[in-house]
Length: 217
Image 1 (cartoon, helix red, strand yellow):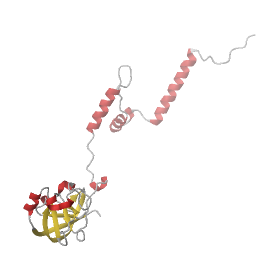
Image 2 (cartoon, rainbow, N blue to C red):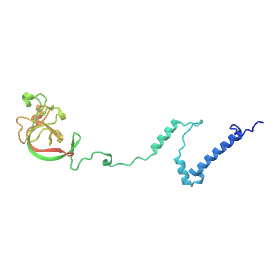
Image 3 (cartoon, rainbow, N blue to C red):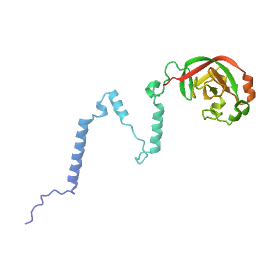
Image 4 (cartoon, helix red, strand yellow):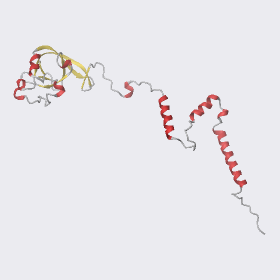
């Protein structure tokens, strides 16, 4: 006598249907305790929930269209308000210290002192420099440094690299001391001009010379 088959038949329509209903019930139960339907929320909450779940653009086959998505993202960025302005200190920009008046080589300057000096002029040719007319200054810099706007001084008074400004020379801009001469002693200054004729036109002046120092030191 054959025994009755007590094992469930996994392929019967009734069993498959019961399995599908059980899974659907579990999903519905999970949704019931996680997120309530939008209909059960207030109008403001429902709108917020819809905003948090943006709908991706799809084609008729239900596939996300990357071109349309990129267009929507670009439009969203364009609608964003511009960020508020940030103070310089907050973004790490350099703020010159108090008292600076000018810049040289990208660095702020302040007045150090004012000297009364006898200011003459010279040119880089042999009429002014004689045998030393080789285009190189006593500091081993070329005469074309700083657009040929530099001065010679007694380095015991103004060492090489000192920054000065002289009314009427280089439009009053700050220029470096890069040269010296045998006759430039004490409170004397020699300003460089490209030609001997321009140097002769300068002549001799007794005037104030402003000495500058870096304000960021």
